[in-house]
Length: 194
Picture 1: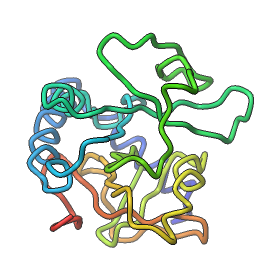
Picture 2: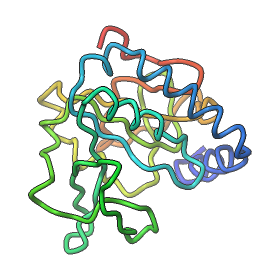
Picture 3: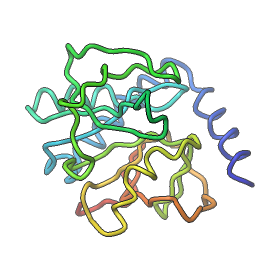
Picture 4: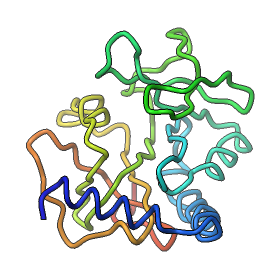
């Protein structure tokens, strides 16, 4: 199956989950992620706000704040459409909608952090395989932002997904940046010892 067809099928899978299934999955995901070595050893953690049926990392954000860690969200640059920043996110952050209708902190370059300064990035995805390959929404934001990881080992990248988004193999493109692992409501794939 090509990437576009696979993306459509897997988006349908996650959009088909009921509100109750989504909430239960988000709670279980929080236990899986917050119990991981990667989370425990990280101070600067980026995540995303769920949309389009994505698994919700909201409970993870609450754990980050409770543990006095630093939480960041991706923010798209309105002037340079292919550019993504990471900005500090707190419960009282002033939020605006980006061009995709997703809430994000109002861009303030003084509150952004370089991607290299993050310890852990919890990434959204459309599909994944156990080899650490990720199928995103097709915008390439994460692949461009973390292209430097070809020569660096920080931050750790862990995709977040519903178990129903797992496939045996994701078709890989040259520009795809592999993840260190994927966390679902059931388990953490890869990333052991990270």
